[in-house]
View 1 (spheres, rainbow, N blue to C red):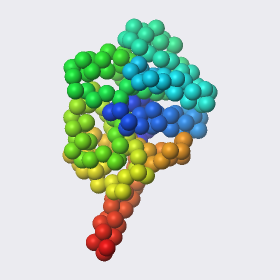
View 2: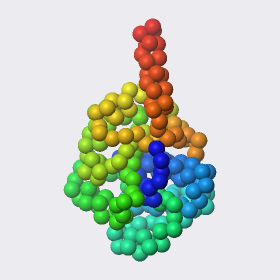
View 3: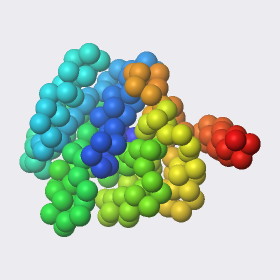
View 4: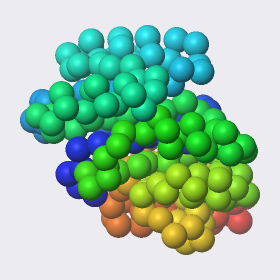
Length: 208
């Protein structure tokens, strides 16, 4: 996948690793020479969320902003034109109410042509929970999925099942805690490798 879009939004349930995925992608972009990057947090519900992002931005030496309302975007957008990429972190919410959906829409940047929304999920989650999450977040119109915690999952069949059942594409994988090494852009070869490992695991289970 190319990361040509200027805005990259990271949404998903609490604990799925949105901030981690955002920081890893930002680190990789910087290593590729995309030096004009900003990190933005819209997470006003989790204690310390903005502070954590601010620390990461200082480590990466990139600008950091905290957005609390649509009005904030109106002030910020004109100053972002010169940037290559703007990575936006969202609060982890379950989207069980109209209020939460409205909040996500209201807090989103008012740009449409250069925006990509990543749904961040955990590879350790069960199939049913992943489908339910995708169903809730489809109202927010995500473009692709990032699966985290591949190193913690014993098998990866749920990823294959998810992509087969949900009409979306894979963007990247979080495969461990290291920044930025443990973050891989999704590719056909990598997916095949995961499936082969699934097959190996099944054979081992049968032999045991």
